Amino acid sequence: MTYEEMIELAKEASRNAYAPYSKFAVGACVLTENDKIYKGCNFENSSYGLAICAERNAVGSAILDGERKIKAVAIYSPNMDNCTPCGACRQVLSEFKSDSGLDVIVKMGDGIKVYSLDELLPETFKL
Ligand code: THU
Image 1 (cartoon, rainbow, N blue to C red):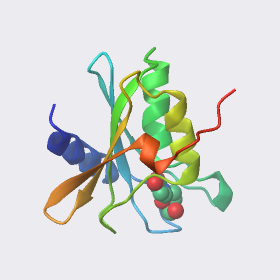
Image 2: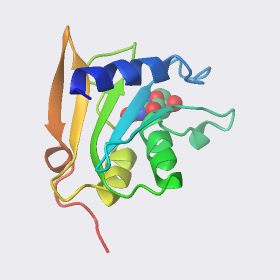
Image 3: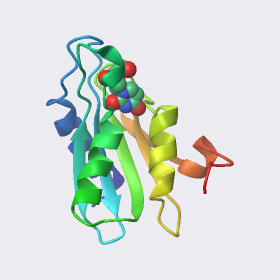
Image 4: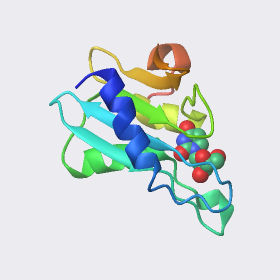
């Protein structure tokens, strides 16, 4: 699975986003250490603060399937390029970072851009 293919899966997932309030659809796809892929989309609520981001939805599916180490996450929004995860999702992703790190892949123009989670969230809170 290439990172470009992961962005395509995230794009597919974004089509199922439930975002009637913000109109901001997001799709995500995580790749685990066992080379499994899980998709997620954001879903909102009339009680606005209850919105769940695409990234955390995808992480939840991976956890449900017994996965614990995430190597990469791809994020896609039709609304903008460079859709990096919000702070809450960065923290949630950091909990499941693989031993070799976690790449964050976003769409950028006709291509992709890859960040490391460590650069997006230095000094992660950890118990
Ligand atoms: N959202 C995501 O799904 N992922 C992000 O990284 C940023 C924000 C969602 C939450 C909400 O449904 C909408 O985008 C607008 O904030």
